[in-house]
Image (cartoon, rainbow, N blue to C red; front, side):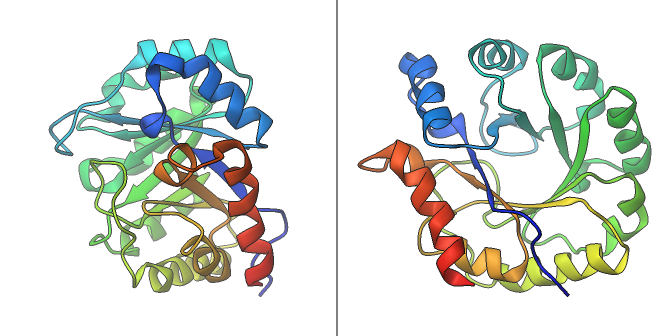
Length: 226
């Protein structure tokens, strides 16, 4: 099985950006070759933190033409689909753990012209997504427990990524396989080798000595790990 037919995508997470300099931070990401901008939406209920809503997405949309990869860590995400799409989301990822009507929700996202994604927490089995692969544009494997930036990568995550790649391949799915959590120079290569093709990185980029260069360095770690 060929794991990759394109270069790794790097999606800087603005959760770690300096919001007093947001326009500069996003311009830096573009200059560094970022593929997507990742926006973490947290509600203080599903995860123990509160972040941004649609106003921030509207603002970011005005600052860049890059795809906005919106990760909704919220309960009842379907209540907000139209608002987020209208604000400028290119893709919306919802959590399987709070989506009992997952197929319907994914189908609705596609109806709205949005890339439809499902995220799985570290303790959540891959089993549930088997039934919705036909409706899936993106599968996000969390490599930390969601809720805060800057957490440490869970060491056994590559095994789950490998199994996720196998599930997608066996179904003939072209869905993106994204990872989020603790992605840095020392972890991205293992995830790429395991089959992930898209990488969310926040702290690793924005806290780097040269954030713009770090985007390219992360991509290079995939190339040298093959």
